[in-house]
Image 1: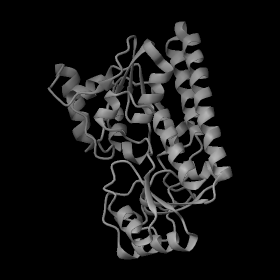
Image 2: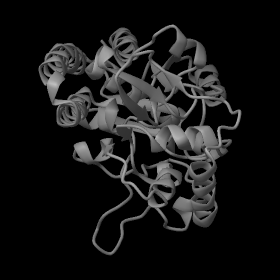
Image 3: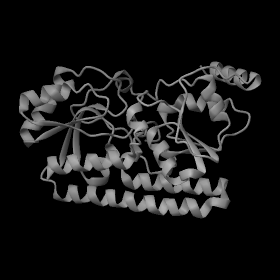
Image 4: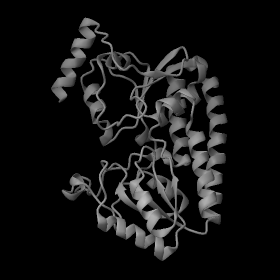
Length: 320
């Protein structure tokens, strides 16, 4: 696979190939060229760079980052950018392979390197896939496990990431450093208000256990605000049908703790949540992890703040 991507890159750059493809999505700005891989990176970069940069979302809305394969046109876009903001981690191994094949180094900021990471956790009752069963995500000989790759679900982490994006933009474009810093300050104030709201909800919550009848991509969120949780699958699990044992376990948790709501995440088929709700009488609610959005949502200008404030409203209504 590495040889394939390296070979593809050589062809693209030597022949100037610009094949028709699905295309990337940009924010319509001018100036610097910033390429991002996932929606949070795109949204953060747009807020900090403003109209001083064209910010491109490389992975199309609704696509799975693990299985993404860039087109020749997208490879060229990546090669010519002033800054790449990616997530890093196992889900972007395809990107690491591409970067290894570059003769000229691309300025790159990995969001996972901006924060203190936590490892993906296997909780009681959770159904794990093939890779977990064979130890691929267990701690290594140094005691380190695979990091959870949804660090932005904590607004405090979002602030840390945005600070690093701002710092890199100031290095690349020092003539506009005051502009970037001012935009960072304004955006930080909004993120701090969101953070304060989530803390207030947690302090006043009648229930401190969250049930996810789905994957669980919000460990950074629960760690930040002091929630316990149970879930059907780990955060990066492949879509799968849950076992009867997993369903029964979560139903028992809902009943025993008299939990009024179960959550599902974006792009879920919601089947498991429906089963638990039918059996227990609880309500199902969306908790959007911000990992991905639809093409329509992106075109309408949905933002990280929009999504997280909606999460806050649903949490307050369900828990307080």
